Amino acid sequence: MIELLRILGVALILLGLFFMIASALGLIRLPDIYTRAHASGKCDALGQALMLFGFVLYADFGPETVKLVLIIVMLYILTPTATHAIVRAAYIHGKKPWKRGEERE
Image (tube, rainbow, N blue to C red; front, top):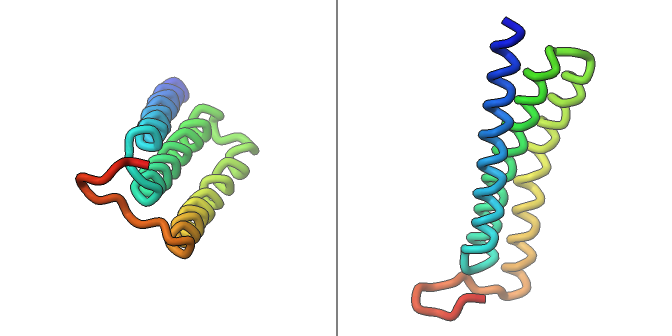
């Protein structure tokens, strides 16, 4: 049973790593701040949560499990809030959304 949890933990860590790499590619490839914020906000939150939950399973539910779960909860509160604040600041400062046919930033 312990070995199955460790295998599942490693699988979740690798899946989280995939989403983190997808987030980095989204930051490089997407044309404007709004689409970049969407990619980084969604993929980072999911990737971090999957990796941390994988660490919980890999750690055999020890005392550090409570800390990891609290970090997951805080990430799911703070990541959307920070993404919203960044996009709102860009909108207030007059950044226009990218349209097809326009030059990329």
